[in-house]
Length: 291
Image (cartoon, rainbow, N blue to C red):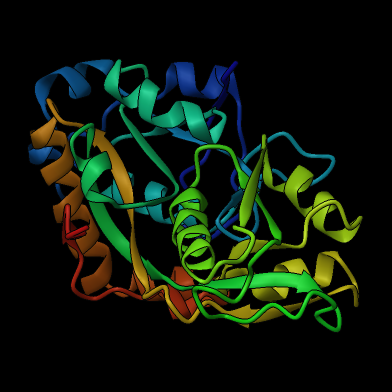
């Protein structure tokens, strides 16, 4: 189901262009600053295959009428890969298929706003590179009287993308509602963010979980139909780049590359370009989540 898309340019802050012919001609750059950290098999392969679901602006998305992928995740990944001398080939993958593909080594890495959780660490390794907070997006005027408390959405239906972390939140809410003798919160899953957003604006669901750094995007896309509310019972979480657990050397090379783009200012420039400074994580690392 994934469609390969190839990077024709590694221009750091420019528009990413994609060309299968260009990627076929690309190769490992042994003169790159951190090229010595790249395992031999990736040097020989000459390209890094990276999975994402390109439906979430400003992180990773395909603009209407285009075929390539843009976003701050794209810029960050390509900036790190450039430090290692590896061109990036992007694969468009449904979110709930990313972990499966990582475990089967269909992809070399993935960057798609995935929350680092202890249970996921059993399947893949995370390089945690950003912090993310969450809000509820809901209808203007909050007709259902939803609050940000764990028992503040009893009887409502929350929508999210299949395979996302929202189920854990909804389970917490449902348990709190049942303990209060009220109707539990329910979850409906959708294939992608566009379907989820339409479900909310059309009234088929009552709320959805949304990252705090992208509130301006969803407000712009839906006009004056929605408002947002902080989720009070959910602390900020680590989001990570994922790697197969057998590929520690590649993972550690990217840790070094992430450090390099922090030190030379590239990380900050990319966040500023996309106006997502709120995600900044200085104390990045591997598998930082404790629950």
